[in-house]
Image (cartoon, rainbow over all chains, first blue to last red; front, side, top):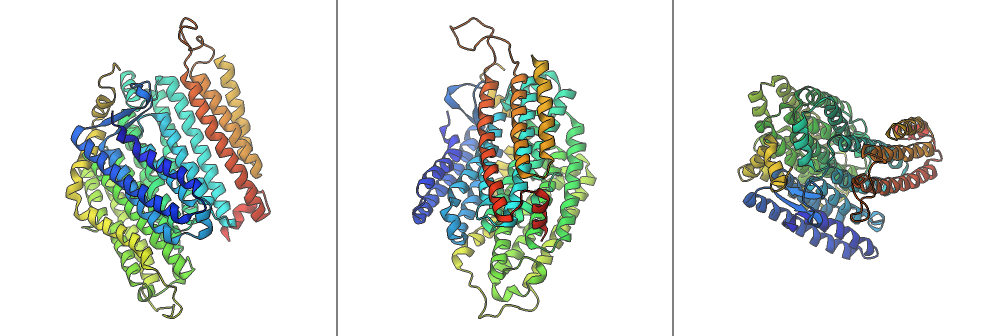
Length: 495
Length: 112
């Protein structure tokens, strides 16, 4: 038994409940939040180290052995995701301590941020398909509240769309689960994998896997990303950062789990359908990132490009490419949090959202400007920053698998990312200063610290990739050999 | 039994899609509610409805009915209840703010 495995979900969930009762005292809410976030990061590190020592661990709730009970499974992939999500959400919540309006703090901002983190961590750790659905819903319900918080015409209209889309995609999730349960008679991921392998992935199971593909593609913003730019650009900085860093990544994680563990038999679906979807996502994202002049829209389209890039790793389908995708997922959570916090800060400082409306900010806010430049380089994948490692491994995987077209599409998108980001940087930070020294809004150092820490983190991941490498290789090895995961879950039990 | 349930699920989905495609916000919300009922019925059907006995050991001899779909549906009902409640409140707030329950008007707000 590894009870520590439930803590990444339990800590934020309990914290959320406690914070609900501490509504009058925001100071107490903040104190407890900090303690909880620190312990969350500590627990995630501990889990990662346990997995390093003992291999894949699992926790059967209520002692019901798989395949009957619900269980949490921790392998290197999920532990890495939990660790990154915890660190990033800790920094974003620390940022929101100083950047959130009083009326939103009074309206349960922190509890719902914690519920969101609980849902995200639960989705990463669960080993049961229905439990994945429940964790998704915990995360989504929290996100519904966060996106509507504060009100305002535009925000409410965007939220309505966002919620309607997600309700429909959750419906598809349930339909897929119903058909899956009717076909293979189990919901345990490892057990599903065994049964699918036994009967062979025929047309029926392939159809079910495509329904799962649609569901997760909607959540991740892969190909079906039309809802994403609007809903990610309407909430204020910290909430948008939380969404951009965590929500789509859970969809990407679920796609990887589904198609490397359970439905890995059909090459057509993985190579052709997912590959095509990834390329279309890249192209659509690039067009959006170039076309818009609203910095929040440009940032949102960069989220879409990153999703497309990670899915190229899945479409190539070899160990090297998986490694690249895992590295890139870690990098992307950090860098998207950084990007959205900076963009939120720029909108806050200037009161404008278009790149044409800002100019010469570098004189007013030099640190923010150079951090945005660092983000630009990181997003484009310039070594030694964190984006480079992931891009390099995906590139190696593509060459190994002979997918030169995907390789080209992926790397061409990096150039567009660089262009779209430099456009923000040059238009907003260079040029004639339009804000006088006397008129400029002060930007407190307390807000800059979390942003700077995220910036240091992205450099750290790039420079310290050597230290992360064994964990990432292990994650990729498990993805490439689903047998390892199945043995760890169903090992002692008759399958 | 399964056959009739499947037809019913089909009818419910048809009704729900019709409602979802309308312009009125409350109709859309009703559509999502009916959609979730359809999928709950689908879950029951896929679990094999009407076969086997009550799954209580010692109360009856097997074969027992599969108890898992019921558990799944219960969870799904709770979730869809919460979502529908939230959607209704959101629709009311949107109506208060923008003075319209027509999605076309609301979409136009967005563009401005």
